[in-house]
Amino acid sequence: MRLLNQHALVTGASSGIGQAIAYRFAREGARVTVAGNEAKALAETVQTIITSGGEAIAVETDVRSKADIERMVAKAIAAFGPIDTLINSAGVCKPAPFLEIEEADWDLHLDINLKGTFLSAQAVAKEMSKRGSGSIIHISSVNGLAAEADQVHYNASKAGINSLTMSMALELAPLGIRVNGICPGFIHTRLTKPLIDNPQAIEPYLKTIPMGRVGLPEEIAAAALFLASDDSTYMTGHSMVVDGGQFIKLS
Ligand SMILES: NC(=O)c1ccc[n+]([C@@H]2O[C@H](COP(=O)([O-])OP(=O)(O)OC[C@H]3O[C@@H](n4cnc5c(N)ncnc54)[C@H](O)[C@@H]3O)[C@@H](O)[C@H]2O)c1
Image (cartoon, rainbow, N blue to C red; front, side, top):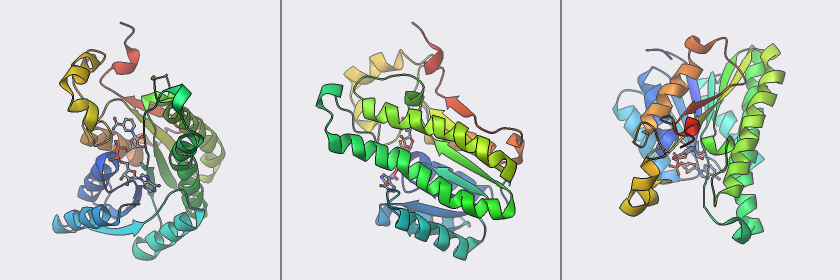
């Protein structure tokens, strides 16, 4: 067990990538605070971890709200003590052509994806700085490194996260806190299900991925485990691409 007796807080943990990280970290011995805005799914995630012999609590949180974030951190610490690892996985993606993006859609993406990541990271980093250690992991996207059509707001929010990763790493390194990101490619979650379920759309899309397949949330959880563990103690400020080779392909 690589995270025995550690405490991990995962936002967006009631589904998809965040949930896979919560499950993997619990299997590796961590006590897990699962946070997010879907109460029923959070409770089910906690139940699954407990049934498997792990320890977890759920904290309903809207990552856009500073008050919610402060409550989330306080509840997490009250339950399981100091936080060793924060994973920011809460996010939304609602594609729309650039010319049709409403101001509300822009705000939704920037508020949940970027501001939510900032608020959680700042609140947890304040706590980690008291002990002089910790690992913060932002779930970004390859869309933060290159452009995908119909996702201008999403792309911008993820590029902002990659910048946040570097900027935070710079200021927090002297405090003993490492900050890294993961840029997943196309991962099988409910976010991508509409495309995966459409054979006419998914077949040409798979040709853009050298490995020729969609990734699994568990494959992102494995990268998060590396960044949370002592195997990455000299890494900070890096955004790790996990995408089956999609980003390197010119043709
Ligand atoms: N699936 C992919 O292909 C892919 C690729 C790159 C990056 N990502 C990123 O991975 C992360 C997880 O996405 P996913 O694919 O697992 O989809 P998902 O929809 O299963 O997960 C998103 C999670 O965020 C939570 N969330 C949404 N708004 C919230 C809010 N206001 N407050 C708190 N929680 C909120 C949801 O409850 C959900 O659990 C996202 O940041 C997404 O951008 C996904």
